[in-house]
Length: 71
Image (cartoon, rainbow, N blue to C red; front, side, top):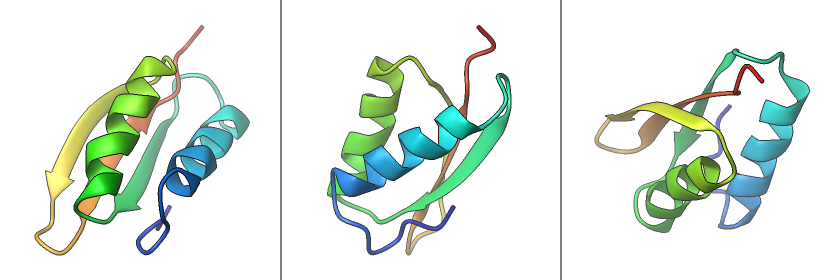
């Protein structure tokens, strides 16, 4: 899901909504801008109970891999 250019907290809300629509255990790939988005979204998702598996720095943006919990 490409959320580059999407401000906080809208990028977190869109990510959370998409995760809620997915089957338990599925992995979501999210593209985020540097700065506030990559600083805030992973932490907010972790607090909300999602598992951030990897953050990949692609130099111009970040790729976040987050898994919906199985339970």
